[in-house]
Image 1 (cartoon, rainbow, N blue to C red):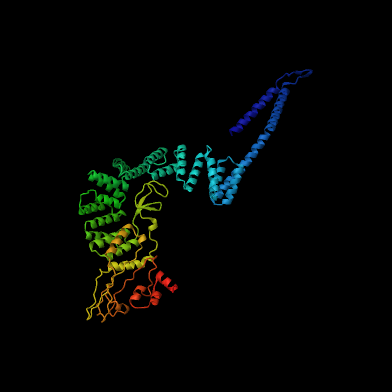
Image 2: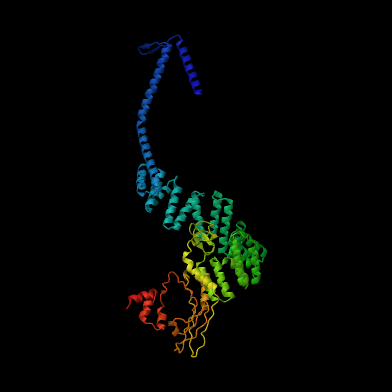
Length: 590
């Protein structure tokens, strides 16, 4: 509306001016040599206007003609650049859906049409990466690193290529150069921090962490936690070399991260050595409430070095009572009590604590039960059964980071280099998925645990002396490769206590042995000659021994060749009945 009003005002002013000029009397006289003209004022004004328009038109034609080549070049360049941008767009889309050939063609077109475009360099580098041409990718990223506007992007690409080539030193040098250019670069700071932690340069790692805080990459709470992790790692490394620096570091760490388990354990150890028992107990209790851990229970039990085993048991019970029953750490408290009770010879207490978990035990529970059976009753059979159950039992929580399971806490994940990645949790890979393959083994273990301790039964006296043969239960084959270290030690100790099959000297029997009264699940003493005859008395139920999956074992159809020779059968029959690799070769041999 305002423009219309303004336009009407201008028309009115122009009309008023033209009317004023038309009303002016007089004429204008122009002479040039012998030429003379004297038009009136309105005619002169009209001629002057036409002359101005002609001059403007002529000037426009001249300038347009002068600028025409430049405009043509610019137009051609713009079309070329538009085609290059189109090729870049289509090439990036081809990379997105994994079309290597199409991406390569578009990259060549973009490099020909828009060689100086940063996106053309990026497309060329990524298409080379997609095709697996690392030399071309490095050349493209190096060209980007030499440009001012794409230097950081080029360094990032060179860093990735160095990682793919397993050049850790080169990758870190590139990351450090990127940090100098841009301290707020997340990937560069992450890489340098992980490298310095892996190298044990804790002071350099702390400096990088301070730089990350200044650049705003992490907040204050995350900074305190990560600084506590780095200080704890330095304290653990210097514990045996420089105890003063280690103590100073861990005390600062426990203030920054009071729930960090290794920091609480080491700080409690230093406080206990300084006879600050109450402070040490408070440090462990604070970490226990947030994350119950067996190392915390161990540190809490030995906070006073001169205490007896029963006093340590009472202290552990106090710590376990502080854990709410609805937390997962309640199990850790019960296991700590059972451990302390076994050390204090309070076997009834340990058995009562472990009773709710024996139906579905974890490896630690099964090993504690094996130790309890061996220590309290000296029952090697039950201890062996619990050790076997520990092999197949569910895994206990462990220090886990990015799928990597470690036997100790570490400050940085070895997989991704992430700081404070290890968590005390059950590894995902060890979660049970199929229990069908464990039915036979579970039935065997239950039978061994339910059966009373074996007792030897001698045959009834006969008129002629008979040499008995002692028959002992064969050791259960266990998968020793998958056995935890504690289970291996327990299995070795149990194996030492097991009876060995010791056949007596052969003797000519003169009379059949008298029938013995049937005893359930007990070994039977029989003569060597009677081994080939059916038993006249009811034989106790035999518990089948389940062999390991990777053990060829012996066929279940007949006796092995060792016993076949003893009972007088032929060697050919023994070879035919042999199982496993021995039977395989005997069937192909002479």
